Image (cartoon, rainbow, N blue to C red; front, side):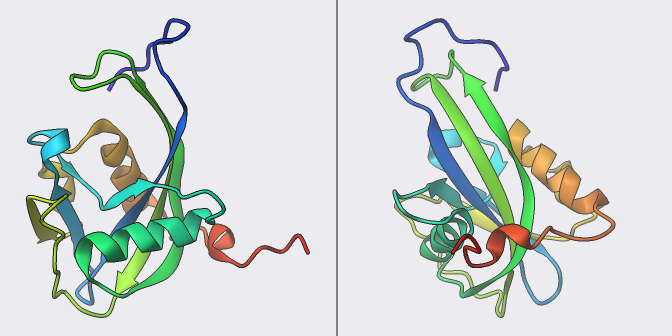
Length: 159
């Protein structure tokens, strides 16, 4: 995915994407393969719905795609991806990736979106062919000395 600055009109909208970095009871990380991203591995996720909080959207996407019940651990990474030359369409994503714990490893993948899933030991996760954005998220998760930041999974404190 490139970091080019798109020409005016080449990207229709800016899309907010949320993802779930899911850990099972053994501390393994769930990687999935989706047909739309080819042979690369990703994390479960998708578009945020209007009126939905970021952490809630990441939990919803993770639960819908895996059948797991998730408990929020916190924000791992955020950023943007811009690719005006992607094979199916140009895109500009603002993304937020959250860590979650799952009580089980019994995944029920949504076959309409996910071709394959695998639990991977943290020490091996970077050996997989990952999309660039998820590689960055996983690298940040693995080197974090204080764990995910939990501030973004708290209820709204603005009143």
